[in-house]
Every structure is written in C-alpha cells, then in structure tokens.
Image (cartoon, rainbow, N blue to C red; front, side, top):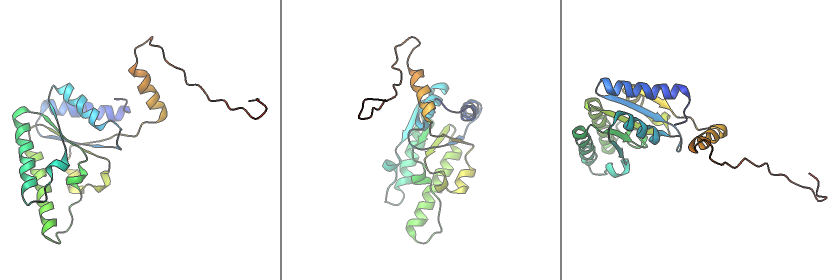
Length: 187
C-alpha cells in the first residue's frame, strides 16, 4: 500500500480484531487517490472475505423510510455472507446531525441513527471512507473503533511505489533533467 508505518500498524490491528471478535468499525480518512479503497481490498483479501463497496448515492432516497430499507438490505445480505462493508464517501449519509428544524431534518437523523444501530449489531467489519473527517458528527465518530488517516503521497513516495511495481532487473527509464539553452546554444 505504500503507507507510513503507523497506518500500516493500524490496518494490522483492524485485521487482528476482525479475526477475534464481531462488530468492528473503522473510518478511513484521506483525499481521493490515497489508497482507502485499495486498503479495504487488502483487508478483505487478508481476511478471505468478500468486500461490498456501497454506493451511497444509490441507497439514499428522498422518500421516507426508503433509505433505511435500502441499508437494511445491504446489511442483511452482508450478514449472510460475512462480507466487509465499505461505505465510500461516508460523510454523504453520516454527516453532522443537526437540530431538528423540519421533517426532512428529523428523517435524516432517523437514517443516521438506523445506520448506527445496524453497524453496532453487524457481526462483521464495516469501513467508512471520507475525504472530509471534519464533516462527520462527533457522536458518530465515537462509535468507530479505528480511525486510519491516509496521507497524500509525496513525490518520493509515488516514485517508490512505481519502482516497486516493476520486477528487479526490468529496464527503467532514468529521469532526465530538461536542459534549456539560451540563444547562443549554451547551457
């Protein structure tokens, strides 16, 4: 994955806890392209479980009660298979709960509470991914067992990752410094 040691250690802890006990939840935080989904795939492979990637835009409904029904179907299917649930862009549904000002706010809070209940009763691993940790409700954050921050890789990190893709002995192009010449042709 090319993550710093602290993050890799946290992922090892997630695997260890998932093997020992039910109801593990984790939050993966980082910008797009930092490896959150890949890390979920690695965990699923390590645990030999299926990974269900949940598209929240397909679950959230404007009709009262439909979002809960959609979430219920996902959790029920996962219970039968023991799959890892990976909610990408989790802040879309799990954002800060606000004061109830109208019926829409009331139902949004009900949806969040329903999700929290299902996560707590789910026997498997649930992973939420977000690029905006600050937008998540603090009460929601307290219910997550692990929070793994995925830093954006530096240029050197990216170079190491690319070099790690190719087998030893494979020809590689060295980085060429561009040389500019002035009007007289000198460097």
